[in-house]
Structures are given as structure tokens and as C-alpha cells.
Length: 396
Ligand SMILES: NC(=O)N[C@@H](CC(=O)O)C(=O)O
Ligand SMILES: [Zn+2]
Ligand SMILES: [Zn+2]
Image (cartoon, rainbow, N blue to C red; front, side, top):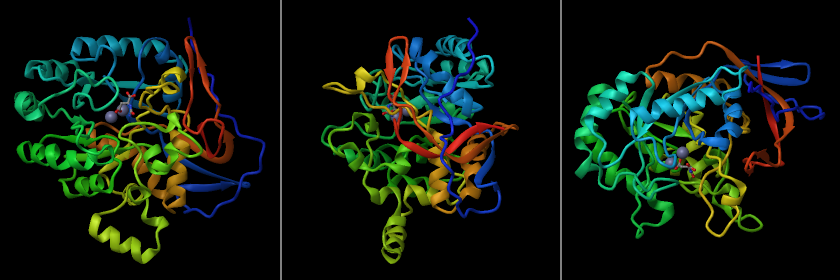
């Protein structure tokens, strides 16, 4: 069967608002603003498998040139052989008119061997290894129980092979408050890890706190970096409870207080005082032009029935809306000129890969996010379902 791309992105017939933006790379076409950027990559992506994979792949493939594909399937992708076969299924599912390269990862366990890392490097298709502390998030049951007790030889080999370690940075201790798990992880695991393996490349995935921002900024550039999701830039923990429980805003790490997101909303003096003591909030860090932060959507689709039930899964499907949301964040910070580095340069530079050479365009033209994405076995509810967003992604 030949699959072609059918998209839910359509500009609404509403006159677009003219905004004052930076001149480069924004240009006005008639009443519309547009930003042309090098085709972005997604450095943290869950594509799943089976019919979920078939349902979601085109939405990432439309926007992004490459994606770092998360290995937390059931069963997880623990070996290079499994990564190669998962990659084949992804390639088969990509619509013919899309140009998308999956970059595979391995799921680290207590028993992953240094030989497996050598195989992974030799394969040329595995680009990183993912650390899930056992029990921290979706399908992490087989994850690591004792990083320093069990994984030292494998980490040593990764450092040797220049294979990045991607980290779900939360402790799982039930005594630690769920809102503090990232902060505690930094001191309990990350600092000692980096002290022991100073040349290991580490990506702190989906950062949610200014503690994480401060930590990443304190590390050596080029060795420690962070991905940032759309939801952690625009939603705070109120979004979980607004007008009732909102399962589609539930992800891990859980959404945090506004103070972690943007000091911009605080009175300026207070913002400076807090920022100088605690570091910068995520929005300021991302829009500052720092090379340490790059795009990772963490788009994590779950069937509607698995989100709307008595024990709902963590994960937000944001592939539809990610670029629109990032553009809005940069626009509001007056930093559209820094968007391209975040979406398209910092990631490949960190991974030592070439930047993409084609372009995508973001047009400031309102469009309505579909209520749901139906697929063979059910439906997936996207982030901001039914809402109108300002920036419409389109191919150049
Ligand atoms: N982010 C999430 O809430 N969920 C992710 C796993 C992860 O990235 O932690 C998933 O696989 O559903
Ligand atoms: Zn995670
Ligand atoms: Zn994830």
C-alpha cells in the first residue's frame, strides 16, 4: 500500500494579525508574517509501533527531517538487532512524499553490556542510549535500578564510543514529592555521573525546572545539553486541573509551577532577583540563543481510552502543534530570530551531525487543531485539541 501524506493543517479563513517581530528571519507577506527556518529535527520522539505508528508518523515526518526515536516500546528496544528491525518498520510506515530519517536509540538496563554499545556504534543507525530509572515513566519497568552499581562498564564504553546518554531525569523514590523528582535527580545522579564521566555526552530530556536549566548551564558546553518540550514551555500545573481533571495535559515529568517556566510574567525587579539567585526559567533559557537547549517534542501518543480512565497514562501527543507552539513562545519573547538555532542547529551540532539543508515555513495564519486523530484501533487526542493556534507550519 502506498501511503501519502494527508494533513490536518489548514489555515482558517480569518485575517491574520500583523505583529511586530524582528526583521530577520521574519518577513511580512501582505498582512501575514512568515518565518522561514532550516528544516527542524525532533531530538525526543515516541513513534510507538503497530497501528499507532502508522497513525502518527506522518505528522512528525511532515515537520521534521530527523527524529531521535525513543525505545520504550513493549518490549523495549534493548539491542542493536531490535533497533534495526524497529527502524525497518518505521521506514515502511513513512508516507512516500515525506523525507524523514529515524535515529534509533537503545533502552539501557542493568544488564546492557559494553559489547552491545560497540555493536550499536558499528551499526551506524543507533545514535544514543536512553536511561529510564525503573518505574519513572511509561514503559520504564525494565529500566535501570542502580546506575552506579550496575552500569559503570557500559557508561565507560559509551564515553569511549562518543555515544550520548539521554536521561529521563527523575528519581523514583516514593518519599520524594512528584514535583521535586527532577531537582533531586540532579544532585543524586547527574552531578556524580558527570563528575565520574566528564567526557560522556549527556542530554537531560524534557527539562521542567529552573534547577535543571541552571544545572545544564553550569556544565561544560558540548557535553551536557537539554531538550525542551512545547508543553513545558506553555503549560503550568494549573492546566492539569482547569475546570476538572485534564488527562490530556498529563505527562512526565509532570507540569510544574509557573515560576519554572517564565519569569516574564513577574514584575521585572522580582524576576531579576529570582533569576539571579536561582538561574533562568525555561523560556528565558531557550529563547536566549544558548546552544545547550534544543527541540525535543516528547510527542507521546496514547489511545484516548488509555488517557481517559481510572489510571491514565502519562504522555502528550503534540506532533501536530509542536512547531506552532515553539514559534509562539519565541514570538512572545521577542526572539523569533533565535527560533531556528533552537529548532534546527543546536541539536545536530550537539550530536555532531550535519544540519538539514531544506527549509520549512511558519506562517502567522490561524488554524484549528483537530479534536482527535482517528486511527484503526481508536483515536488520539492531540495537545490543544479543538483550539486555534496562530502559527501554521508549511513546507517551502
Ligand atoms: N513523557 C511522558 O509522559 N511519557 C512518555 C515517556 C517519557 O518520555 O517519559 C511516553 O512514552 O508516553
Ligand atoms: Zn521521559
Ligand atoms: Zn519521552
